[in-house]
Length: 283
Image (cartoon, rainbow, N blue to C red; front, side, top):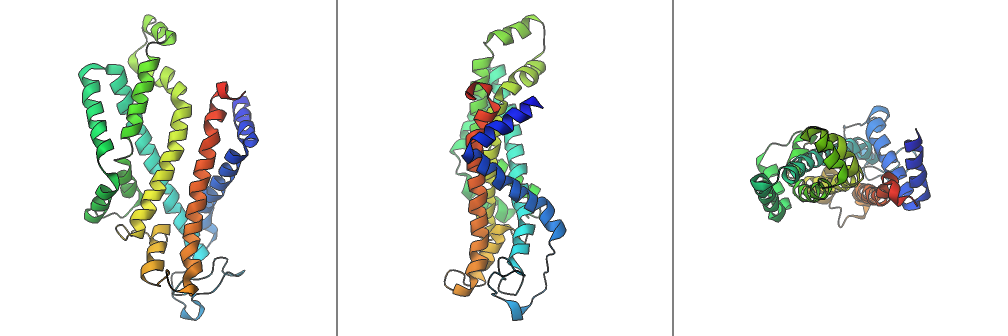
């Protein structure tokens, strides 16, 4: 309880991080509760298309009369789900490979870091475009796997460096003397010390994954969800001439504004996360 209170106190004192946390909470509430309480009507209503924002339609309507806010709320579920799953995959892969390389050393370290370096040098986005074009992407999990496949390499090198610096410290030597196994040392002793860095990396990985998924969906390579913000942007540009038709501005800019707010929330929250999780920085 004291740790949680200290965490939230630090976040609250950091106004930028507090604003980011509020933004993320609002979007997570929208993603979890929005689809439950906000009805998504998919039938067309041409009599009410291109409606401006009103009490009935807070973000107006699209080119076939569907409520834009309902689409934003339902689409936020897939947007955040892809971000969270991708970050979890990338963090897990990066930690396991980096810890194994740093702890084992020798040929294992050389081979794993060579593979990581190859993935770092590969241009990720063109490969992701090709994979989404070849593979039938029908769920957020498949999309998250494609994005995460190129998001672990840089983290693994950073984790390796942290492991190399920690495994020569006194508390690791004491664990060796006590006969504790490598699994205990890595997951019980080293992992808690890496928690602040992994938490910040998780937020940044989620932010990058959301950006990649919106870009891929906007380009029409994986339209598995009609309400995903990227698909909405694709429809606004290709089906409604959103770039030149003034009546479509609310349908075009609604997902753009939400995307910018979500990215801003991730950046702001990550800025104070290290201070909140690292007692040595709370002076």
